Image 1 (cartoon, rainbow, N blue to C red):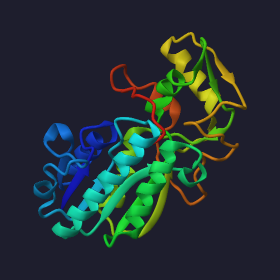
Image 2 (cartoon, rainbow, N blue to C red; image 1 turned 45 degrees about the vertical axis):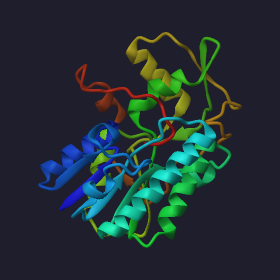
Image 3 (spheres, one colour; image 1 turned 90 degrees about the vertical axis):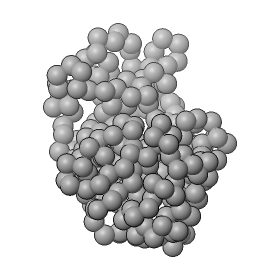
Image 4 (cartoon, rainbow, N blue to C red; image 1 turned 60 degrees about the vertical axis):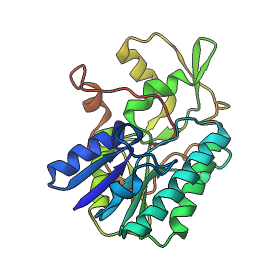
Length: 260
């Protein structure tokens, strides 16, 4: 089965391509650095020839409100148009748990627009909404600094390992389109401020995390359960302690982002 992974050289995409190939599929890593650009359309027609499914795990290079909206709208329209021409039977997109509850954020308004285009398309689809990744915890601290302290809302979330994201997205990609949304998350719930503090301590980072009820998440005010998946979410297996105690070098931190 030929599966084209848009954003196939990134944090999730590279893992997904590797896992799909291990399962015996023809996985194509499509990204600007491999000659495929979903914004300009460069390389798309050739990459999609003979593809059964396309998995979009790409992200905008800029999170400024207008730029991120333009990226997701342009990229998604181009993808769907070329998929229709190529006869692709399954469009899979990685999105974020809580997206519809975060419309005060420019980033999440862009993700809402992306999901709307997918739902209105003729291409059978599966939207996979994931929780935050363990790999983003340090980056979340980096973008939440107020002075020399990290300010985060004391709310619940259910983060997961990037490897588990790839595994679950891959399972959905090789299955039948659900023509709806699937939520995925980690096996444990934490308070954001407490888990970020634990991660910083583990890294030897001396920054203090402040539980600030007024702190925003990606520019939006959130409540206790805004970021939690529903009871029917598919859960990864990797617990935080297992992930954080992997050998040095096997954990790749990533720049924090609200999405995958």
